[in-house]
Amino acid sequence: MDLKERVPEPEGISYVPEHVRGDPASAIRDVCVDKGVDLLVIGAEGRTAAAAALIGNVAIKIVRDAPCTVWVSRPAGQTLTVVDALQRLMGLAD
Image (tube, rainbow, N blue to C red):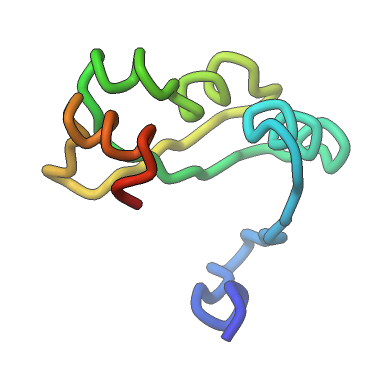
């Protein structure tokens, strides 16, 4: 089942799922420019400042460089700690 089947289009709003390769923040910015996107909706993990410093924060880069309005959503209560970040860096966690 693709995204269009799982998420119905609300009345008066259309969306187009895009799959891109490359640096996530740059690739997403380029698609927004090329397609004339008005609103970009992205998901983000909650993480501590230390964890973000270790593994970066794509959501922050996207918000900083986006040519349109960005809506960032994350599950309530979800936080990535420094230990979680280190495990990801070492390939020990998803």
